[in-house]
Image (cartoon, rainbow, N blue to C red; front, top):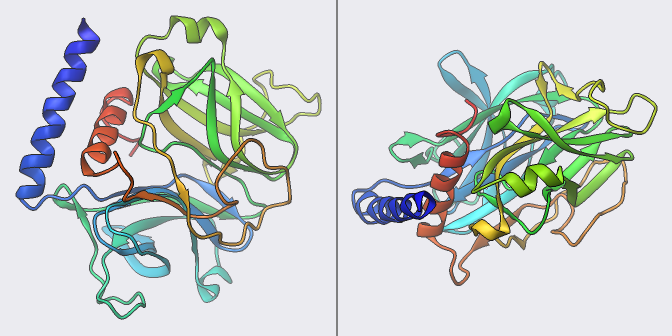
Length: 315
């Protein structure tokens, strides 16, 4: 009964936001990215939604926000949800790179087909749409998931969209709702993988009602081929290479997105084996213009994730 009331309230709120927000000039553009290690300056922006065509742009982090642009990738579709957007830091900047935070900003475009300072930043709910994350030079290490949309699990497992391990190691799933309790792990050789499922504890899955907040991180193997909790996390600077998303058991329903492959930037990984059916390796994917997927779905996804993750992302 409580779940039904929550769902009803959410739907009412979505309707109000879509009706009043859009009519009042408020957009739902958003972008997110997580810490990662890259050998060549190409990073993956985990997810973005744009109401108009534009750019995903990496900027220098400054004390009061962001500064010079470091690299940009065009987002050509309107009302599209993009995942795993490859953005390359310009060679001159990358040549002297040290581990640091960057800021990804969504920009519109002025129609000349090139990113310049004249392309304005985009807003979401009245503020410029940004996210910040650490980029460290080194052997590629990155993991991406469902981002701000809840993942609907069809059994006692979670799935990450992409994982690149610099050496043999582990994908470790924690329940953020229960103070980071480890609920599953999977051992993988070095390489790049797509749509990798990680089994979670059966008793945890059976006891879960509604959704839970998952964090999936990379850990190095200590030589025994098993995760026992003592293995060091793979880090970018002082932050663990990780991804965060909410998970809803199939019995609870959920919003399901179906990414459509578009472009395939260079992988830059160490080979590896693709696991499961997936999108183009390393490529930006977009969902938009499909039946049943539009502004209301995006707002609903963001709100459901916000509720599941305790009111927002980590920063």
